[in-house]
Length: 288
Image (tube, rainbow, N blue to C red; front, side):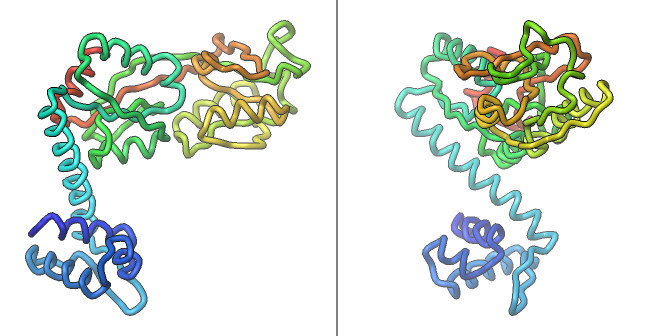
């Protein structure tokens, strides 16, 4: 078995189409079929069910695809780490985050990391919660900053920040900080919320705020990007509820009205894989 067998099978396992996978790999379809057949022969199991019309992964194939993807990503990380060490660097930490983590947590951590370990570099990716967990499980990230309460058992988690919520309105809205009394004043308003694709748990937490106030919101727009939500609010297309920390650094014609008196809170969690052996990550975790 060679690395190319894993790469070819991974491409086919994702596409489930020989012609499309072969095009992505820049090889012919018969060559791809031969390589995958060699892999199955060596393993002694069928990874794919082939018919004239489609290709489907077997249960063994689903398992092997998941592990093969992890191996390939891990090898790429090891190669990069070796190159950095050869150049006198201490390594790299691959960080995923939801937008609100960039407001106060991550910049402070990176500043401290640079002061204490100037030889450690970082790469940053803004991703939704689900994609971050997938990236951790496939060794595409070292650490993720998410808004979730439960994570897969292979992952460690630590709460790094707890926040209240704020209502966001346009500065042209008839209700602002001066005359805000209760969320009941917004029963007839259109709401712009984070999509449940952002996090189902987070979305359910927000919806419980409305339940406590005895009404269901009219949701006009959903997004996974905070900036998109703020832009829509600025244009008067609705109002929003977001974590209070998101108000830092926002320079738009919108106003944040604190809802700190509500029982609901939102937690930002740092999550990483229990089996992660990146030495740079250990030093990064020490700063948390």
